[in-house]
Length: 222
Image (cartoon, rainbow, N blue to C red; front, side):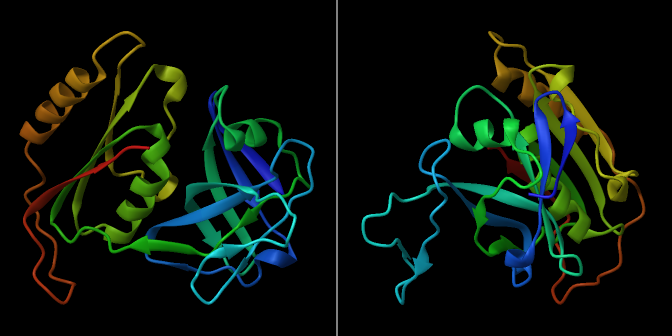
């Protein structure tokens, strides 16, 4: 780890770097990566090798690392750095590690594999704060030609994370469902209201190999 950035009271961006990331690769948008944490706090981090069947294999007698799946928010190959955003809460080894990690703290990560972005003219993303890294990377791949709107469900204002500067012209609506309220109902009403609003009249150029659909709703929750 080389840096940490507080995105919101309960969300932090961890920047990973160092010689071990020089060969790191990602493919597609919203690329997922496996992170590897010590088997218990304070233990030595033991990383596996990948066998011919693409399985993780650990040295004999070693305690396997704890693994979790996260989205690669940014990958800067020129500097060998990777950004991963973490939700900070009281449970979970990854959240506990991120809450106290400082430059010099070590974890392992696998290469990232993503997906093709939506090819519609009009795209509505629906998710929660933990899904924002995936939503942002997908939206950035769609580009400025499409009409993009985002609806995000959070417990309160403390979970709101500003959109990346690259998406400054994108409409984003935060709705709140405090603990004890029906989050599903709040989100459905918000999505219905957003979907009813007219999209921009200007339509994008056909820049992909196949004609894109007119509109789509992309839902992401973590």
